[in-house]
Image (cartoon, rainbow, N blue to C red):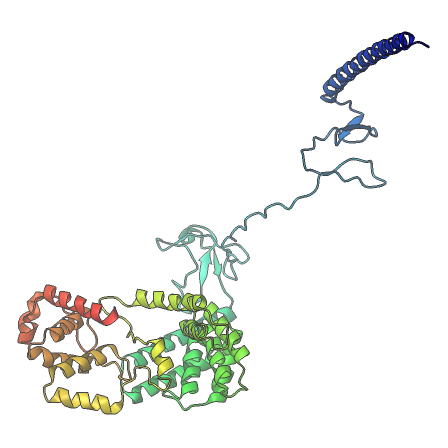
Length: 457
């Protein structure tokens, strides 16, 4: 075959392949067009699914006659089908937010006895022209609580007791114990004599036997340290353990101290830490102070200034709210670094010999000693008991010598008042005061303001 013939044959084959390829391309385009048209029609048909089908992840599946209708599934949801069931799909259950707890309404007592036994009390109710919004003892000589079951008792005379005889007796015992407790506290607080304080603690001991919680706490601490009562560690521990069962934070702190020091028990720092923690959670400031110091120094716990600050801040906020420019609890400043450097220090307590020396100087006319002793007796602390009478005597001596600080403190004592010095803010009685009291109240309060800034800042 010649070269020309080969060229012609090659050209014919190329032309034939070109025609075939164009035909195939046209067929493919036609098929794609039909597919797109069908897809568009299917998409329109999917917008309305027959009742006997359901849509599962984009597929139309025939279901039984009792199958549920179409469920729309959002992206990300899953469908679970259970074998043997109708094949219906269920959305995954998600935890829902719990409903807020509603406060329980106040329980309405039901009348016991009387003329309307078993009927609920009505509040408020009218008795002798006065409305009562709770059970009352008015009109009864035995002190039992009662209520009316209609609004107008005077008209309807329908009533009943709010408590049983046993409950009334328990309430009377609790009220009697509280009255005795307050009496004992007044005796202890308003005297500086040890003999009278001992009498107060004897009364507290009787109240503690009646089951009064606060009295039991004070008596247990007195037995622990031997303050105004004979020291008795086993009995103190027994009282603390009873109080712990009632949730007393003071008792929990005390048991922590016993286990930390090994007093009457085997020493256990772990138990001590547990009791201190529970005491602090209950709001006991001493427990917060102990935990603050332990975290600051790393005593039995990992050292953490942040944790120490948390406990100390609670105590500081409480003291700041109690102490004001007009006085308050005695505040004794202690530097922790000083205690580390001098572990045997008395933490600010004054030696008896030093106090006697100051008293000697005051009797000889030393004004600074008189003012210092006056402040110690006014607030108490540092080993000196609070005594307003002696504070007044020392301030008066210094004020007569012309000391303005003593005059300010006297003005403070008159403005606040006490058992030793009646309150007197009026200018009418200034003529009856010593010459040193001719200082105006405005000046006295200004001086007092600066005094407290020096003392507490």
